[in-house]
Amino acid sequence: MSTERIIVDEKVADEFVSKLAAKASGLPAGNPREHVVLGSLIDLAPAERMDAFLEDAKAKGAKVLAGGGRDGTIVQATVVDNVSKDMRIYNEESFGPVKPVIRVKSTEEAIAVANDTEYGLSAAVFGKDIMRAMEVAKQIHSGICHINGPTVADEAQMPFGGVGASGYGRFGGKAAIDQFTDLRWITIEDPHQHYPF
Image (cartoon, rainbow, N blue to C red):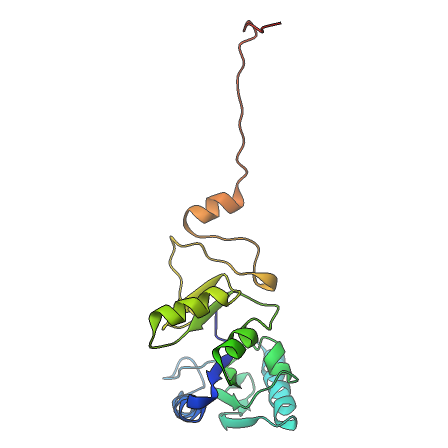
């Protein structure tokens, strides 16, 4: 459910990325037994994957606005601006604290970019006009979509699951019963019942 791509209207993108980069720069990374926000990734391979994403993105014109460094398996909170479709970080899930910002010119382009992925677990739409945000949310192919809230949200009674390569059905609440059981009808017939023929 972690946010993998941040899609921003170019009219507000400069201000947005400036604030996001400032926030990311203030997130301490290190030993989780100390006062940090970001601890270690599971092992060295995903940390090295973050390096590969950054090198690929920078070589193709993206700019690292915050972070970009790592110490072994500890990766700094990183914001990458001006990400385009030809970059690995646009197409592949990072599973790390390296986040791409994709600038778009319109709501229609934002929806197209949001749907330009094989994944579809959770999405979020932010906007002042709730009804417009709801219309946008309806057009995004995801199992979950939150309006004016983060992608990471779950409630035990709600159906949880994605579309595309992000899921196998739903769990949570009654949806779990439906997904993990087969409804059957078993009868006990009267062997002496009357047939009309």
